[in-house]
Length: 299
Image (cartoon, rainbow, N blue to C red):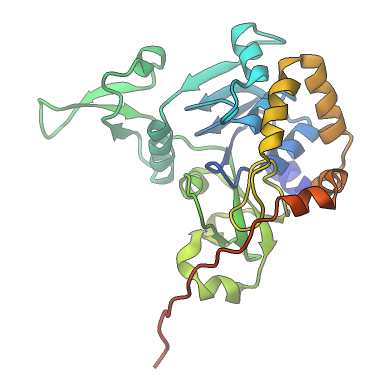
């Protein structure tokens, strides 16, 4: 992770760490904080605790997002301080709907100049975001839609359950816009719970969400999504999200947390060790196997 972030994430970049509910790569965000990257534009469909930590860590000058918050708990207090009080400095924001963010990634991945979307009617979001523009259909003068610009991150970071050394990455469970973000990104880091042989990937090709041809680095990092979860590997650490509300409310408490859990640790392996094996054992899910299919045989 240290090498991938040092090589591929640069000051001033637009960085997208994508994953929806699960497969949110906190370890990558922590490494970006640890390396003291600066002036980043952070893009994410649902920025939650990891972006609150990154904003508190001083890496970001702008946020491109849809919904944001501490899911199931409340606000992201570090982000709110930056937006509402300019504390310790202003944070520029650019807001879309969930689908608007997805369409931006699709436009970026497809090399399109914009993407049409109907869902901004009766919404106030276009009033606060001039990049959401109404456009009349070239085929029907009576039809008006909104369009959003492409989103092409300098670096897209996505987490997968498994990948091979070439970067062919497989995902199961809830799907977000990892695929679209990866294809839209100029540089792509795939983080996974385990690196497997190519033969494992070939046995189940329909789970391959991201092909290695668009991937620049593969990082094997178990438990990299904590306190988020990785379907089939570990559950969500709900207690952490509750604790974060208390931690983030006070800037000094938050800075102390960052020092203890990010800056004073060299790697995510140190983070895992600091939590202790009992913590990880408690997050292990039970088995819920998916059935096998027969892809056929060569004649």
